[in-house]
Amino acid sequence: MSYRKGHMQGATGHAAGLAAEACIARDYERRGYPIARRRWRGHGGEIDLIAQDGDGLVFIEVKKSRSFDRALARIGTRQAARLMQAAEEFLGTQPRGQLTDVRFDVALMNDHGDIQVIENAFAA
Image 1: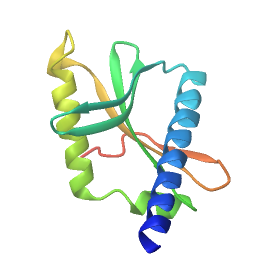
Image 2: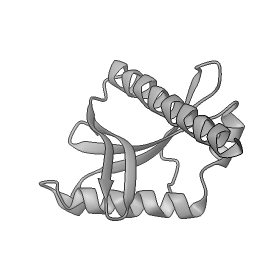
Image 3: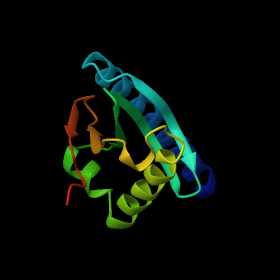
Image 4: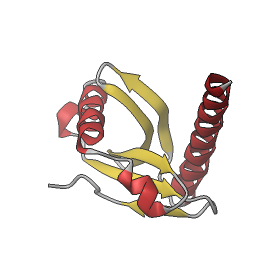
C-alpha cells in the first residue's frame, strides 16, 4: 500500500513538473526567448529547457515546490555540475560550439503558479 501511495505521489510530482516547465517555457517565449529544446538529454544529464537568446542560448533548470525557497533549496552543487556538463555536451552540437554565448537560469514556480527567474544563477 505504501508503495502505491509513493508511486502516485511520484507521478503527481512528475506531472506538476511538466506543467511547470510548460508555463515557464511560455513565460520565456512571451519575453522574447523562443524555446529551442525541451527536456534535452545527453550523457551528462538532462536540461529542462533551452531558449534562444539572439545568437546565444539560455539553459534553464526548472524547479517547482510549495515556495520559491523550497524550490531553490532543491538545486545542489552536484545538480548544477550535471547541468553544466550536459550544456557543454549540447554546445558540441551547435555551429559555434563552445564559443556560443550562454547563460544558466533557474526558473522557480510555487504552488500558486507564480514564477521567479534567477538569471545567470551559476555565474562564478
